[in-house]
Length: 404
Ligand SMILES: Cc1ncc(COP(=O)(O)O)c(C=O)c1O
Image 1: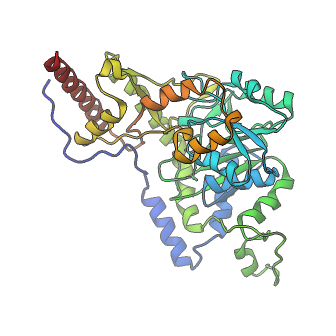
Image 2 (image 1 turned 90 degrees about the horizontal axis):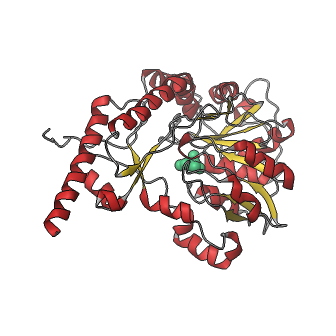
């Protein structure tokens, strides 16, 4: 079959925002209230119902949500938190910014998520908690993680930035009380977007007022309530805090995205499984695990691992070659401990890495490649992705033959 290069560049993801979101934004603008207000409150209520949690508070990002969760837990200088390196750096940097030490455990190469069998060896008297990351939207093996946490008196905060809509053991991520808090992201790449944004889910009523204060100047009530008829005249700052509130303009998008989310995720699932069919006869890649009845995926990312010894080119060369064919792809992620700050950090905190290093994280980190996946991707787009991949592979094969 002859190969034709795609005419326009296909990004690896793109937000799907419809007329409903646009009309709702216009409604907010025309109402005269664009910052935190009634729509943000409504979005939080719907988010709470969707995630089957008792409380859910929205803010400007998952990074801030993570920072606030650690502040609520009273993370102190030298406290150790177990997590994985195959994540966005904010999972680690929020710990470091509060004086804590992210202690890294290796992943299970099948899932790319935390391998709970490695947790106990990493626990020291300074360990206070665990942050499992549901990478790609595939839930971590939470039962085993909660068991370790319970045995050692540790808290669990789930990084569900990529996992809106995923379920563990039949329940939405964040809904089990054994995790004290769970954070979600609404960044434009995520399954549900609000432009930027994030939220914390939690079960304990006592946390609600603290989180409200920590996201908004140390004041418990948001500005819109004060300026409404029933609002009280004076505000009271109970502690110094950042400004990280969630705007009605963001909620205007989120309210409609939330209604569409299950449909979006179902479509992502179809495309995810279709990639398996399209890759059927190729052995140059290790394909991802699609989960099972316990670990119900929300198909945020389709990560294939390039096997350079079979493909004839490295993952980085693959990304570049695909770009030349007008196909975008992503790297999620360059392991955190490879970044210069963390290289230096783990030299100073050698005990925070296993003695034998993180071989599975390193192996996958060099090979992982996120292929285009979003609900608006057409089958034709997807076919073009795979045709371009075949083309890149055949060129690499031809180059090898010339060399021989
Ligand atoms: C695993 C993970 N954690 C945290 C974040 C941070 O989310 P945000 O951009 O909303 O701060 C991301 C975003 O890419 C992520 O993928």
